[in-house]
Length: 391
Ligand code: SF4
Image 1: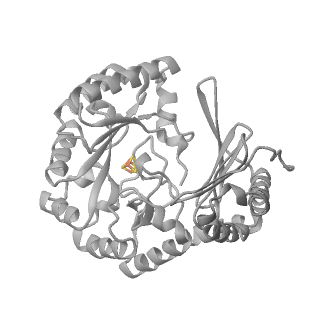
Image 2: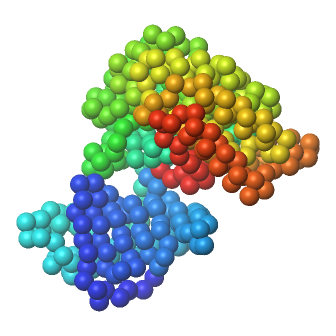
Image 3: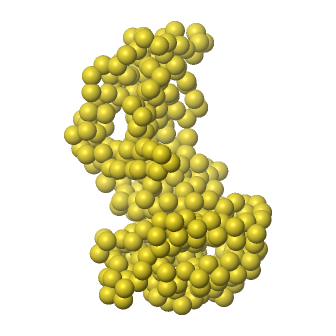
């Protein structure tokens, strides 16, 4: 990518958690506090760099959002372009910064200048030495510090889910967890201080016995003080923990729990090979609320296609009406994405399970949103597009 028009005055913002450099109206580069590119808006596209130094592009055309992984060679070109912007800022953007903050500006740019494309690409190796790939997070945790207390999912047999097919369920021993926490701190660097909250991954770390979770919580909070903890849990595994355990975890710093409820329609849940049911979900979520936790209830839109659509909508609305949700809670509606090669895809094809059309999916999403708003007026209702996840 060649040099750009920098005739417009530079815009620079030294934010508490980011440095923003804009040499032209159609280009905005945001750096983390280590000086690594975080987002880069250029020529109508927004690129986001993951902690593993992969680049993802995003663009909305006529209301339709498109997201893609940027091929390696193009990513290297964009990293080089980011380095050009940083170099040009050093030479040309001084006037855009108040005199009182020039020293800070110079220090931030100096850190940023050290991030050559090669060094940025090498971050992938540091990431993989620190983490198993982070498969998914709830949307409000994209800015959290992720700590992997366990790997995978203890069930791993829901037909629609491919998040953890690449790994067995395993718990990280306490000493290894402490080393992992230190490695995460090192990988994030100064950026750690801008993160909000700690997310305990992978799929259901919170189902571990409290005796195992206590040292994990302590190590996490010692490294990232005062940060609230969050994690995923599924109904059928979480309900095995007594209410007193959830209260203890809240006292240890757990603030919110994301629950993959998926549907209130029991026949559909059985079709998905996910244990539990609406009654169990209602009891479990009431227990979490009773323990003082915020919850994020995740429902899928479009799952089960035409065959289950009416039952899914009806029973999910009924389930939501039973939940004691308040202003701290969220109902996430996740448009269902069939994973190629999944057991769901094979069964749907074998049985001729007709998917919802885009219009029907939009209608089901709207109906679920209306049901959530009517049943849980205090809770926030938000979209959870899993294919837009970047950490
Ligand atoms: S949906 Fe949840 S419980 Fe089911 S396999 Fe995936 S992570 Fe495990």
